[in-house]
Image 1 (cartoon, helix red, strand yellow):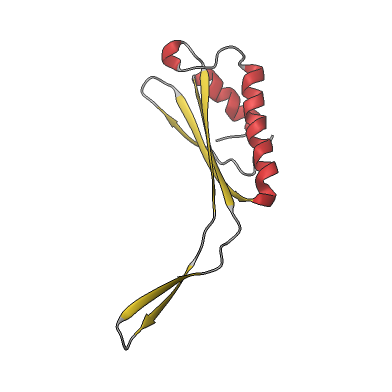
Image 2 (cartoon, one colour):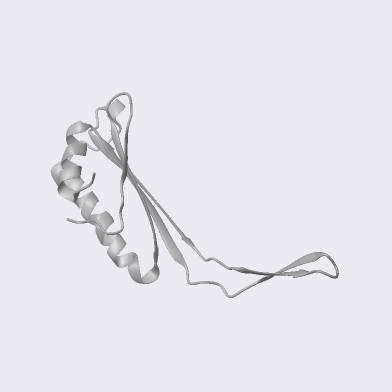
Length: 122
């Protein structure tokens, strides 16, 4: 499966545990597609690596962390009154909310190799 929203960065620790980090920030219209990608990755991991999810120090072969936030951005309209030497700020019209989701997936070398192959992650 080609991922359009999840763009993973990879790192590896001294113990050989690899970590894939992705963050996506989308408009409300894109949320279903982002959720579908996240679900595809996690369904794949659970199906191909069942019963071995957990921290490597506890014998686990893979694990994940999923976080999300919804934010509304309100621009500031800034004006400068040169005669008074003052800056004035007023809230503008709020933009539509954006949803930001981060997904971190980590695992041993075999898990990381399989994830790369399954989702064409570099």
